[in-house]
Image 1 (tube, each protein chain N blue to C red):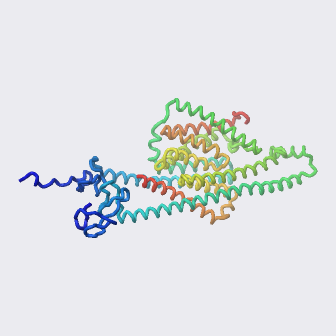
Image 2 (cartoon, rainbow over the protein chains, first blue to last red):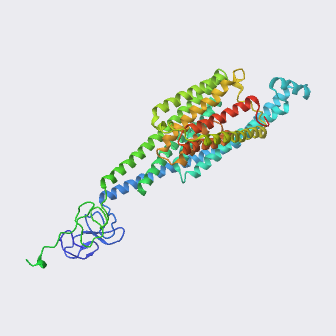
Length: 227
Length: 270
């Protein structure tokens, strides 16, 4: 190889010219042959020889990837937390709802004291279109369905947390839409619930939004890398 | 002059960048081009890279628009629900349809380019539309048995969804429950949102995301099990036909059959 400093055909050891001693060659990252400093590609295998600017760009990109991954991981952590809280919410809602319904039913039963079951059924049928047993079944059914819906939501969040490993963007986007929509449903049923734990809710929405954007960036960076 | 002492010919230049090639080099040390390969159109490569970056940027702006449209629709649904509580069911339904039509109309105007191709073609021939009619009947029966089964399982004795229309002409129920959702939900989900998502996602992901958004916006966890598959079917129709009309027809038939079944007790077990 010709030394770019002394312009003579020389052997290189440790990147130094055997004649003038100038550090004028670098190793090709692909074929490990010597390439004169300043050349952009290896003339033996065609590999790109990274320049100082390339190395800075690569470090920058690696830092960007790391930050993106951190945002995705934060979003996934919150998905898992929301999943566990929703699952527990389902169990809690079943037990607290059942005891509340039982209490109300006992009070209602007490108000029918002295009335025969047949008369009670007739009165209820006229007022609500249901017998006593149907009212009891419906009240318990509503509590069970609400708990099952919460548990189902928890399972969905759990699935999204799992899916976010392979498709962070889509999973985070669905989790964000689902979380905000469910918050709205809860607020429509009980407006005071909107303010309960508002800081945590804002943190969750911010983390999921940032995971959506990071997930998208991750896809874009991945595609750039492949190209 | 002796021909042996003639000046040796200069080294050949790289056909791609014009840099002189070393005699023993297999590749150009300036651009990495392989010796003997045809020249590379560098301007085309740069243009392709710029187009790719533009596609990524336009895809992200599409995703942001989808999120914004979804939250606007969510706010509209919440407003309609508050109106239904404050006034009566019919007012809530009418206001809900009006608000959704308004939001979708604005979004469709703003992103009319996403709708241009899909609104110009009928998508399927008569056989395709006949298939949609047959499939709608089967889908409505499956949905009916699911809702009926849920009612039986939890002993809910659910009130009819058509109660807001009990003292109105049946045409109102068909207008607000079948025609309006078929036009505006399809224009919103399978039109604008589908086009915006398709900028950066493949067809499969676009169908899945638009179906899930469609399912969630109905704000009922048990109904996710029917609305998400329905959204997948409508999204598939949109993708397969390249047109908005097949999914509009399917949506209208589905909702219309549900309304007709509820109004005249057409389905078994009702």
